[in-house]
Image (cartoon, rainbow over all chains, first blue to last red; front, side, top):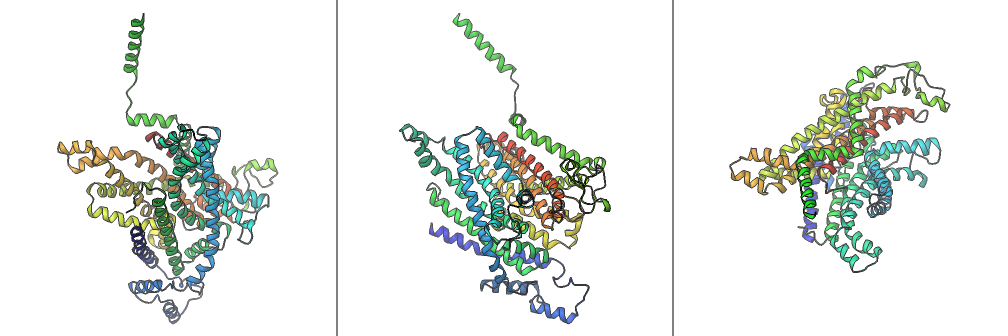
Length: 306
Length: 320
């Protein structure tokens, strides 16, 4: 087990290297520099050279990449092209908000999806089951920004119940967390229902029933325990979904987090910030996947991790 | 009496055996799909959307790019009954801030969505099938390569990767081709082929040591023939289901990119572009945002219903 964890942790290094390489190559393959856009006030060649030297983009690309990776190891992500501040600092300001949003959404998703999935499975083919499955289908299918638009037009613009710009009070957090959690939760509901349906048909559940256990302890103690294993493994991809979802939701609700920062830096072609946020996102996703894989081995002794 | 009844029963059994039409696996699946009401509704919606996309130039009341400056921000005709003073029967669904007819723009948008649903998914399928089959059946270097690429691509969130590709290639010839359509094809294809390849590889590995493959090999079939005639038909079902879900996935990607302002270039109408445009006037009138949102929701739901139906029809065991 320990060897498995160490091997997976070591695997993060080459993967991060390739993520950095791909992003770096793409960013520098793009034509034009981020500074040559103020064409109404042309800069002198000397100024451009000085700017390029300041941001260290005057050297050949492979050399820049090596320098970047060297700085990365020391925890330096370079200077933002548009904000004249270190990328680490900018990310540091946004990451707390993004975590609030992400963790809030994950908790909300878990809180409604698991009970709903279990009840749907126990009451299979009833009206309750059909309606929660319809809800889950809608939640997984309709894009989060579309759901957000519907909510904003009802609760924000229409009824003036909730603010929808910024991240200052708990009222501001209601809609972003709801929308972000809905998609992940809808997906988890489907998984929970499917895996619960499978679990209640297993022999060990029949055994538990036939030895006279109360229905409640059959469901909670025997079926549920096993049904939640696949659910736990989906939380990794669901977290990845929350991370990608965060930049749509943050942009839409104007939440000052990492996601909005990412979208803005894409629009402004601020490559150091794009690189930094991409690497951080990739790192978070790898950690999430690794945690889930380890959890899987712990929860289900039948799975042998190598 | 007893024997007579038995022979009677036997005969009726024989008769039903004879009259029951032989159904193939695929015929059975088709029957189950049509019987599924949600999937049927989905198919009908997709068919209607397809017809609208094909005949958009004939049925759209206006050119989707035509500006009617004085008729900006008209609301849909039915809002008249709720007290709106800004309706005009000439614009059934109203008009946007520049006075473009929303109905016409919605109709033309379906063209982009369907193209986005079909072209990149075909590319993904072609690459994924080839690499997956080779990795699964031949193994070796192709397999190692696939597994390493998978590690890297899986570390990127899908959408993030597409955004990076699309955003950095903006401004190049590739990025500007067909109003940004081509680079979205590339982005979706680059990110998604790995998933299909992995699925195909897994399926091939599960099938390739089964008896029927061994039998084919024993009678002298070559690897090409075994892969195309024996393995491929047996792994087709999960691939069809994956493709059915990849189509709405691609459409969603386009709409998110366009919504964020890095997808299809305005003024070319797509639902995502329309939502992005309409957001500027959202507090004045919500319709320029709500109508394209509804369209994309309906079409994505239709594809999901068909996808769910296909999965249930092709693999009755995995009801989810």
